[in-house]
Image 1: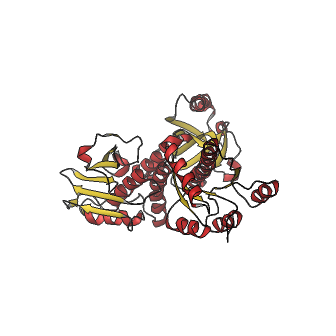
Image 2 (image 1 turned 120 degrees about the vertical axis):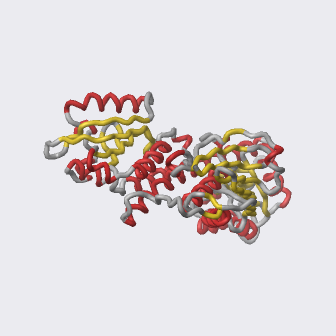
Image 3 (image 1 turned 60 degrees about the horizontal axis):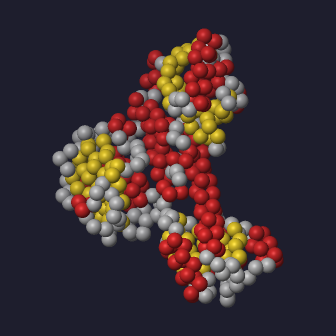
Length: 436
């Protein structure tokens, strides 16, 4: 995802000179569309603002009374260890720069008095925040892999350069091996000789980008020399910043009953998300992938054979489902919710709550100051409008398709189809959900 597609960078500017704090914030805010900045005039005020709201970066002067810039850095690091902190000071010396670097400052920039300094500062801010966001995205992906490779319903293997880097216990059990024996082995070593050329060709096509995702049946070779037929879904993904192939493997025949279609659909839906280019893997998509797999993990924990199968005989009241989704999303203190007309939706409560929660995540991202949520039942299901409470009505705005999938279409949501639209003019998104 490009920087232009990211949420705006929120910057807190700290300087004991009121005019300079305001000037810096105003220039950053007005001259850079991707930055939203505010200024405060003391370290105490800065810490209060950080506690009250979310900021992506702190830009601070060094020479301030009571608490200087490096002391503020220590206080910020204690509360928010990874938050980017840039020292922007008119008092420049090698001693201060050295101390700043030793204290863990993200960047150090000396004020020069010219307009160019603000362009340079904006670029330094973007660099620091982008680096942090990318690291968090990688951590989310690796957390997802960790969850995936601990499940035991479906065999999973991840390869780079045609050798296994990760393998789960289920795949090792299928092959009569230990996981540590499988890691490091070539992928072709677990394929029956008569199928190896076909599998290598399929891997090459995915490595080259010709095919992002393939599904085929192949004979696999167990450690004892026996062979068995398995269905393989292979996806091109990114692992630790490098291209990789994720294979989801299930024996055909009687063993396939161990992984019902609901489970396979969830894992495959998450795999489709991870097959996207790494630049497109934002927090919303990764959250959706985690949601898919969390239900599989829950099924494993409870011993159930399928995740959250809905009970169509128990419709849910829309206002109850929206209220629970708002609470789970942490929006209870910032959201104004209107459900009119209210009514029942012919789907189970958990499914409708999940649908609304994912709509909110897709519309809002991670930063929310205030939001209005308007929901209503329709003849086919329900509709959710997420907007800035200060915006005009949706009917007065033109519409465009929302540019990303939130994982709610088709059988992955047990019959709930979703159409989402991004509406300019302050309205965040409009979702029409059909409970088929």
